[in-house]
Length: 347
Image 1 (spheres, rainbow, N blue to C red):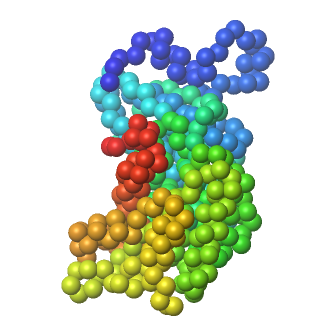
Image 2 (cartoon, rainbow, N blue to C red; image 1 turned 60 degrees about the vertical axis):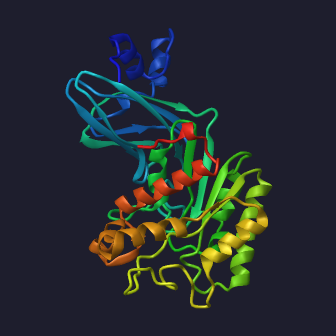
Image 3 (cartoon, rainbow, N blue to C red; image 1 turned 135 degrees about the horizontal axis):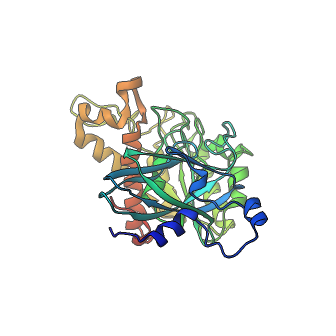
């Protein structure tokens, strides 16, 4: 942390390095800065796209500030600042319509940010178009998506807070989708595939709703998604599904329900692993990671990861659980050299 002199603070607060501009032009093009904010929220009238956000946090008293945005996305974890000091933080955010689930309501046009934390203090903010951001597209179901309301949260909704400026999450996961329905939907695959650019990562986690998909079809659908990403110059990453919280009496997870084996006997995680190996695709084995974590916590403590206490739901995650699982994804992205370590937050 360091103290910012008044000139630096003013520059950040006013946002854009404005030079001498006629008063009328300044009125027509208001800077995307602190004037767009209240004590608890900011709104910026920007078109769909990708934007870099730089914030200055802190004030006269000790503070703790977090930033959220759009449909309940976590963009910056709570940051503590000592009294009388300021710290700058930056992140990159994707703005689109619909802003949450692709088949959901459109949401509010522009970029909406929320200012939270134990003692929020936003001293300055600047929003500019991102020039060199790399997108991380997410293809998935309700365990991944930007859930519209409490107490639900998908891990993709929590992933942005772990990423620094230069990496943006474009979450195109959608509740209730299988590999069959995702590929068939113009709002889903038909929309996301043309957006993929060379160098973008595309994380694919679909299995929870493939309850009636036979193994050959499931495998072919995963292969089609992989091929479609590569056609656009993107890099596909296959992700095995998070486990369901269903325990055996011996404290291990149930081999069928918990570990995503459907009624036809299709072992979804095993098929994902096989396709990744055959196609030379990076694999994030989230089934193995979440299984190890849930079993280590046990039947009681693991309830906090899911919505058992709130909804008797052993499939969907709480905000806490989604945040923990997003951290596992971040760790795997770095471990597999898919994302540089310097572009992630570890705290």
